[in-house]
Amino acid sequence: MSRSKVYFISDLHLGASYVADARAHEARVVAFLESIAADARELYLVGDVLDYWYEYRTVVPRGHVRFFGALARLADAGVAVTWLTGNHDIWLFDYVASEIGVRVVDGAVETSIMGKCFYIAHGDGVGRLKPSFRFIRSIFRNRFCQLLYSAIHPRWTIPFAHRWSAGSRGYAAGRTPSWDGPARASVEAWAREYVTAHPATRFIVLGHHHVVVDEPAGTGCRLIILGDWIHHNSYGVFDGEDFKMCRFEHKTGTIAQ
Image 1 (cartoon, rainbow, N blue to C red):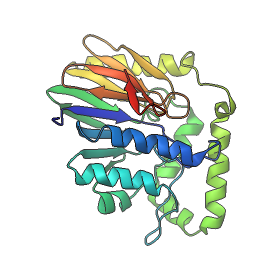
Image 2: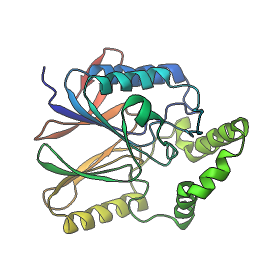
Image 3: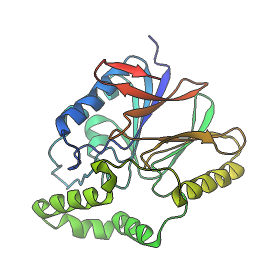
Image 4: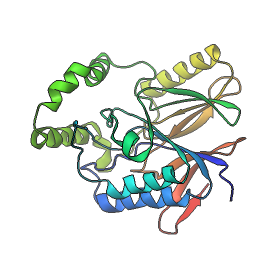
């Protein structure tokens, strides 16, 4: 089978404290990665892959061994893997790049995939942002603040980070996210403006919102939001002509489209 497909996945939140069975969660993701090994030419991890991650100069957090191993096998087999950092795995520095061979991008990717123009980003910086979120986002990306944070022992920072994450994802305890309201209006308005300025764009691919969306975004362009692996087990696949949103069925080892 030829390597003819490009896959997109986001918001796995591996290691999240609010996921009931972390090992089963990771196993489901690994099974998906193994299922695409035969025909994937590229894989885009569109942010919040890890619920929390901070790399120190000589130390990395424990866990996610099977996931990293599956990524390494894909990269070793020639699959081009790009990891766009989100607002939860923002402190991903050079470990996966140097150890696994994954390209790490902090920001958006504007690229041509098999002749079609894509805009790919996690999505936390898209649309109208609340001033408080904009401030926190700037603090997290500030190198000096990162150095100060790294001086605190992980026994304090890691539990704090997981409590923060659990609080920011209150819907995880039974409530599913909604795509209605100000967030939707803001992202859709931004997408239309972007397509007006970049009319060759055919696909805008985002994560972050934990909903599955596939809708027009101006003339000839589609806005795709990839869902998550907490509620949806969803991913996107592009074959050079069409982009499909799909769901992975772990129990059967099959891919539902």
